[in-house]
Amino acid sequence: MRRGDPVGILDDIVSFITATYNSPPAYLGQQWGYLLAVVLAMASGKTVGAWLVFYLGLRVEDDIRRWSQRYRSIGRLVAWCERFVRKTNYVGVYVLLSIPLMSDTIPIYLYALFNEEGKALNRTAFLVANFLAAWTRAGFVVFAFLVLNVFLGG
Image 1 (cartoon, helix red, strand yellow):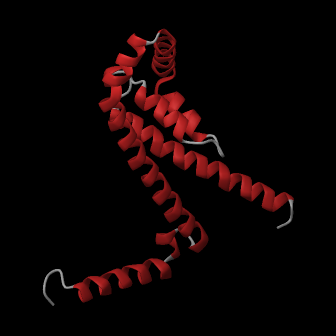
Image 2: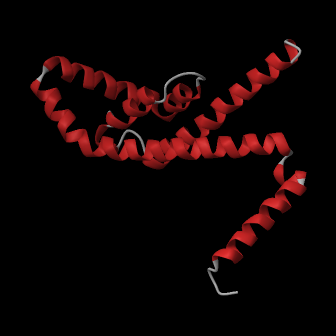
Image 3: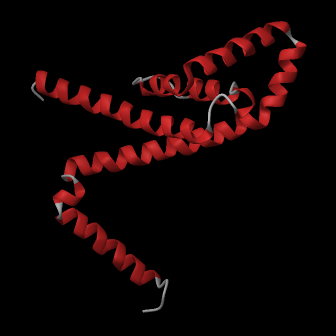
């Protein structure tokens, strides 16, 4: 078999999946393994999206500053948002994104766009807070499901 042979790679993938399927300790049990894979994919996707929004926030900051100098009401809103981001920091990102059923869009854009010159929040810590918040939110949902399942007799 040549290196990079598609059939060989496919065989390796199938044997890996079969090995993890047949080994519950490695796969954390069948139902929990599926949940783990879904939550990992969700958290990774949210983190990539947050990284793109963080990058966008750094790119449009000059435009936001220009608008805030041109219009007083926008200037007050920008100043308030920057104070909020500086005061609540990563804990604020984590808490807001951990709330089940809350939209991710507003907190992520708020913290990314009003991150004063990229200095109020470090990019890596911002992304870690997003990733951990996704896991926390999933944990709340699983906990609620388990509680309802037990109390409702499902």
